[in-house]
Image (cartoon, one colour):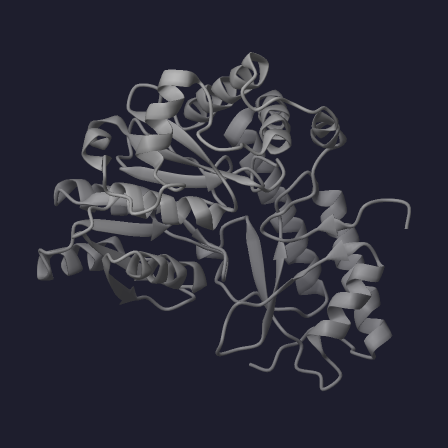
Length: 372
């Protein structure tokens, strides 16, 4: 194969050549040139959510989950109590990491094929006044469902509760405006819809709560308040930064702006999703979600009912044709997932559908009809 395989996953993603080439230079982590790149990245990230007046943004080494854990530890007091509306695997992960850090966490069950209901969140807050914060997964990539950020934010503001948003797979694609949507923290990462490479997360923290965050974290490396204060004084990261990841993200943001920013990226991903779902439907595949609640980030499909279907064989055959799919995340029904994000367009999605068609034929499966 004379090209990189296309990653149809929720991150890492397929990146452009420009983004890859940005990583070919070595940088000194304390050097003024690198500090300028960090400052530029932070400023342009704030621009994306219109948060220059209301928020700061604090970068952190590691995968996106590192930053979720850091945000909870920094923003939620040690005697705090978080409510996590739960319609998927990443919701459960947020509750688990909160509990492991000593914070009380309450899971609010939501069907996996339904978005969170803001009215139900409000009822839970009214029923338990001990709750201090809500953690909302904006796009639950376990299924691909989009949860109603603006509506939940209004509920939290009305009740004086903090809101922590895991926007890992939605940031830079779905609209998020800090001027109209109040959140205490919002978390995203380099290797998702900004189309950088994995290796760093970043957390937007509301300026009004910053001072109260001092001393909350029980971790040295994940104390975002300390990281923010240190960066403010020195322009540097406290500990060795992922230099190549930072400069790749800087280049990816430049391309994001050139493309037309969030509206243009959402439009392209929406076209990708449409090309995928239409093509897969023609092969008999059925999406897990109703189209009305499907975010154009990743689509969960029911597995074919045919006895010859085996995900590992299916995956390897698609991989041999140049496309990496993603296993399902559900426990009750067998599924697989196909991402719509990354430096790809509808043409690549149609190629992926064709690879699935050829894979079915190789496996002796007539179509993707599920056992429903």
